[in-house]
Image (cartoon, rainbow, N blue to C red; front, side, top):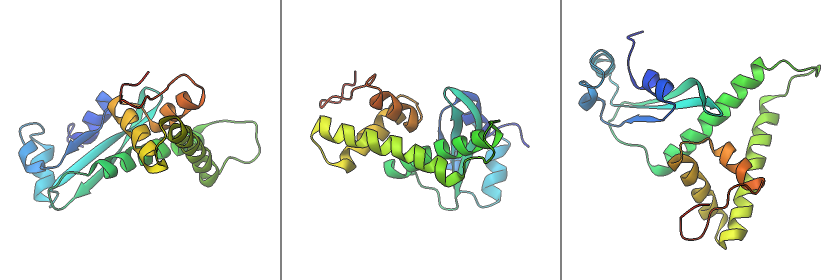
Length: 168
């Protein structure tokens, strides 16, 4: 409504916008930040909902107490944003099937790809599943890609993450 803020910025850039100290962002968003702070918002985090490289919306999270998200929370929010985008796209998809796919079926497909890629990475890097998933999330975040896209690239053999951190 104010024409500015982390959600619109995230939508426009296609990148996450993390404002852990909203009061410090009054210069960045002179209408949004003071209005949100007045309502008791301390932090706001916006994540783009993407279909490939195209932003179709944003997922926003707010905190009363100003503090940053942990790396794990940021990774989880990226996964949630990817899942929400899939669900939104599926609801608009016109298929010849009589019954649309349920949210559970979509989530299962999404998680299957991510977990299969995690397993492949675990074997490839000779590491735990937890560390392999962290590498997968880290690569997605560092390259501004949905985790599902990175998982599909790994499963198709088009992307290989090496042990030293330089990915090919």
